[in-house]
Image 1 (tube, rainbow, N blue to C red):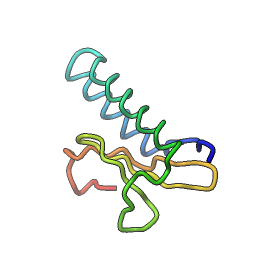
Image 2: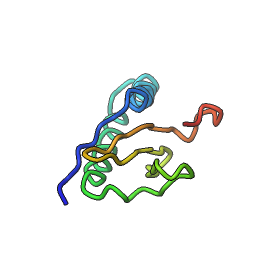
Image 3: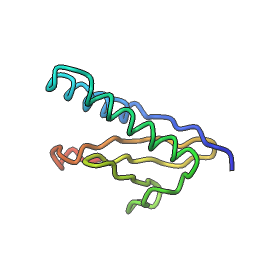
Image 4: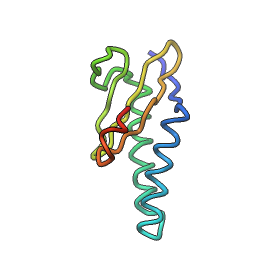
Length: 97
């Protein structure tokens, strides 16, 4: 099976960006943000090769992969895997995807 291309929804991009900016501002340097990016890249590389590694959610379409205190929600399409949300578990649960 060929690797599928992983794409990010606008929502997921914004959520990841907010997390990265928060830690950059809080820590005064990019080190921890870069660590998060590296971990996300590792997961998306694995995901592109094994699209069903995530647990199926209750809607039976979206899958989720836990990453420490984050959840990566994604959906498998014909030619792509779309990251639909990058959820920080420490957020207000009413904002949930």
